[in-house]
Every structure is written in C-alpha cells, then in structure tokens.
Length: 333
Image (cartoon, rainbow, N blue to C red; front, side, top):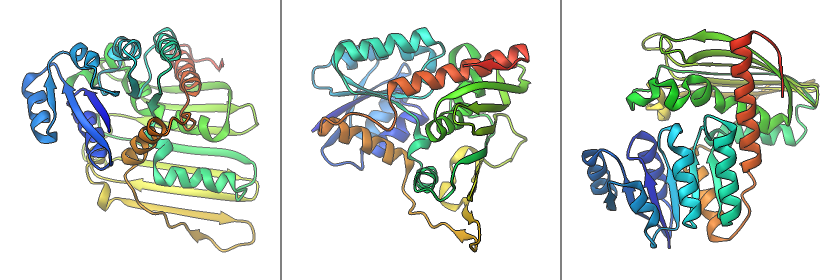
C-alpha cells in the first residue's frame, strides 16, 4: 500500500486526490492545509487525516509520498523538506520561480535517492500523447513549424494566483504547459523571443513566444490568462512537417470544468492521402500522470517521461522568455 500525503486542499489538491482514489493499493493518508475549514472538509470528503501543519504530515513515518499542491513560492521549502524525510515527491507545476530554487530541490532529491516528478500534465493528456506518437512514428516527417495556444480566464481557485511574487503569473503557470510540451516534442531550444502584455498586477498574463530549436524546427506559442468574460478555455496545437500536418483543437467551459462536453477534434493530413480524423480514447490526464508516478514507485522504475533535468531546462526557457519580454531582445538558451 502506497500512502500519500497531500499538501494543499485546493482545486489541484482535490484533482490529484480524485486520481489517487481510482488506483489500487494507494491510500490518501492525510492532507495539510493552512485553513482548518478547507482542510477538515477535504479530510471528510476523502476519508483521510487532517494536519494543519505541513511539517507534521511530511514527518509522519506512515507516509510514502508527498504530493505538493501549494503556491509556487513554497515549492522549494517543502520539496526539500520531504526529500530529507525520504519521501517520494510529486510536485505540481510550475517547478519553481528561480533556477536556484529548482536546483536546490533536485540536489535534495538526488541526495535522498527518492522518486521525484514535476506534474507536467500535458505530457499525459491523451491528445498530446497521440501527437507525439504520430511524430515519433514518422507520419509528419521533420517538423518545420509548430503553433500552439492555451487561452483562459484567470483561475478563481485562490487569491494567490494573482500575486506574481507567489505564482509567477500566466507566463509560469499557464504558458509553461506548452513550452514544456514543445521542448518534449522537439528537443533542445537554441534561442527565444517573446512579446506580450503585462496585467495590472505586473504579471505577464498574455504572451506570444517564438522558439528556435537546435534541430531547425520553429514554434510559435501563445498563452493568455484574463481572456474576455465567458471566453471558453481553449487549447490548440498544429505541427506542420515535411510530409504531414497534425491539427488539434479543444474548447471547454470556464477553466476546464466542462471537459466532458468540450469541442475536441484532431485531424491528420498527409501528402497524397485523404485527411484522417484521429480517434483518441479519452482518459483523465491527471489520472494518467499520477498512475504513471505511482507505478514507478511500486515497481522501482526510473521516471523517464518528465525528468528533473528536463524540468530544469524548461524553467530556463521560461526565464529566458521573461528576459525577452522585459528587454525586447532575442535570448539564447
């Protein structure tokens, strides 16, 4: 039995808990949350213990895994603490707000010899898994250009999202999803350029980024929080290759609450062939992500889909984009 302690009883903590509940031989042992009311409600809903202090849950000898769903500025403190207690760690994205904080986590994890993964859920999203499979199978040839977007209204789960010092704003919290995925798909990045608009809270909440990859591919990625009222959560991905193009569109309700009735369409175009509607078996991406992480723990397998080194590199790309936004210059990685 793998026993999990969840830090944070908010939207993402509950999302992760819903996934753990579906897995065999996994127990949600406890939750910690600063608000006693939210924490106790979570403990009642998921039939687990409530710890007001994260330290007490991390130090509990019964806990095997610490799942960190806290504001980003707290990631380093509690991930390092969990590693030193010998706990395996699933860390909700973004990794951290600085390279030094992220490196401190990686060092602690390596020293402790525990499993660690940043929860980059798009890598486990069925449509994005399929896109990578299509590319890896050679159906697109060499990719020339990628376009991706992720457009949303600002999350209303918690006030800390609007504090750029705590969460980094849309650049770190939303845009990072697609930056991570294109890096996963196309490999190392050579240089970046970005333009965008700061919100009143000084966060880069609407960004358009250009990435130049070492393999010659190019990507244009748009990410936006604070879309117009009632604008649906939207994501799209188009990869144009030498011999084929894959085109994906998704549009759901406000902040993904209505995933079941979303518009969801993927088409594969290949030279000298009729367009093909790509059918994809639907399964919750958060469940896929957490099931993979738990399987690596149970069977002592290396975590390969999202490695710490890749997550560090993605953070470097995000910080380079931030530098480009601030200076108006192309930034080499």
